[in-house]
Length: 242
Ligand code: F6R
Image 1 (cartoon, rainbow, N blue to C red):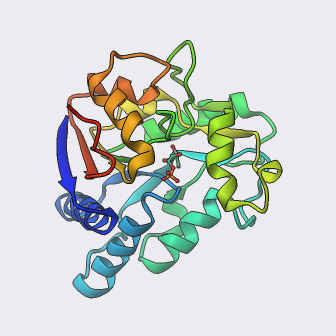
Image 2 (image 1 turned 90 degrees about the vertical axis):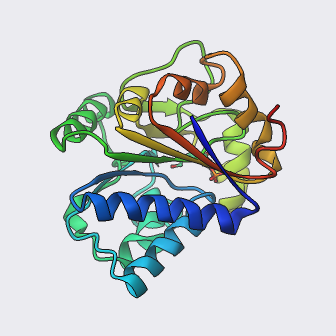
């Protein structure tokens, strides 16, 4: 794993955006795997700037998102589809039909998960997957557990994740308890992975991902097996690395 250090969140965001813009410049038809949450917001802002000021073009890019809260319609303020529109898609020239975010209202999550993975495969797989990391070591909503789970599927969010994400809702009670999450197979199938981490509350997860054993209790540790992963992290998130 290549580690790129940044002094703070803004520098992490600039470096991550350069990485993604480079991917799109080198391969304008790239399939980008995208993440939501607080971590990539600054990266998306920089990408919007590259689009507006430097002409980086997303017209041929296809995107697939990692996850969506189960039970939230796309129009809900806290849905990940809404997040992507507001933080990125509405400000660049990506074609709406080329963006894919899991459907949080699907009635048959099992069949839907299979279709989502097949859709990713039909695009030729993911060229660059952007990831954040949960403070419990999750990637997408693959929570710590007894196994690494391969397919896209309906998952139960764990207590830690519900607590972490309560900041986006009026109260913890309103945080959905389930999500549709991309599984490890499509994530690890990506040709390149860019994982971001910022702030001290990610330091333990970053240390365990990099230095711990490969353990489903730390889902991100499976990235040790991928041949092309870059971590861009600020000093606080790297503070426990030996
Ligand atoms: C979001 C996702 C999650 C987040 C993680 C970190 O699409 O898949 O794994 O990347 O929960 O969230 P933040 O960035 O809010 O700390």
